[in-house]
Figure 1 (cartoon, rainbow, N blue to C red):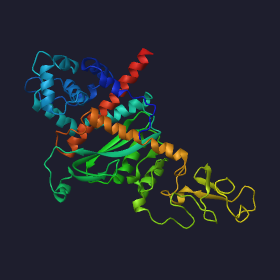
Figure 2 (figure 1 turned 135 degrees about the vertical axis):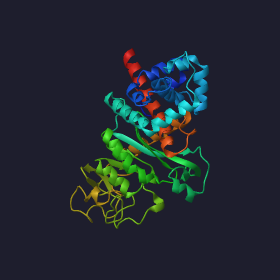
Figure 3 (figure 1 turned 60 degrees about the vertical axis):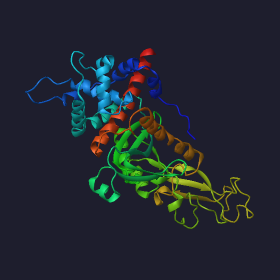
Figure 4 (figure 1 turned 180 degrees about the vertical axis):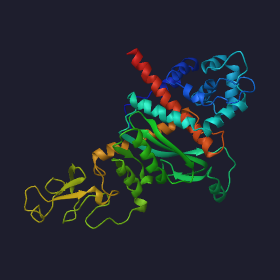
Length: 396
């Protein structure tokens, strides 16, 4: 079940507009001149090349328009003069060739310009109040490769596409040959804060600490929401290192017997074996009270067996004793469940990238080019949000 959340994002509204209307709005939030300057040819020989800013605009417009190949982009630029003009390319000469588009894409990859533009847009969205960043959801999604399938052992030697497997939301096992897109998403705006691309076989928990560090360098996260696949001590420690709390369900498949007197979710038991009542936290200290005193159970011995106080027995637990089992807010409380429900924001972000854009329609090979392709898609989300926010402010 998806939880409806207030969102600053109006990407779907832009998608409903006609191309001739939405592209000017989309490009209004982008200043690509610094990046285009790095794409200019240094050679004094030969004819003047195509406007590099225009080609960069075309490569960004491609996922926005559902164009997933250089051939299709060349065809659109050749046959749609309005589109070519809106991309800033000259109308009195032929459209950039397929090879030209491919070469510029390769240069963008080599210089990591897409990654730099993405990070600059994240910073600008943060400055303009579009991104909050205090609550961050992390998850991965499968990206199928545009490469010849190979045996797993051989694929691991290349560092590119490989075989991956994971359970879908219904518990069904899916396998694919390709990559994983690991995303850290601001839960309020449902926009990406950080992303990484790995071969498909890489475990999700391996990349979570890096995504947390990246998110913390761009915002001030207080909570990270992740599914049970990330239930690993190093993930909780990584969140703690950036002064945040990881909200992760316990993975019962790898669960060990809890310490004596402690339930699996970290709730202490009273001397009669009843689960004690969570009564709030003071910093790292979680407070639990006698369940009879709080009216949760009717203990046959009352409170007298464990405490002479009318308040009942109190147990305090320091979350540092076991970062995985103890959590602030306490695991399975109403507040904890509310926070965990925000994790669906990363699923919606993934859905936009794969359903509305071209994240899962690869026509490039190699992990570096795949990363560029995915960064361009993520840039579209950020630029769209900025454009929509500025348009709303202008109307107001």
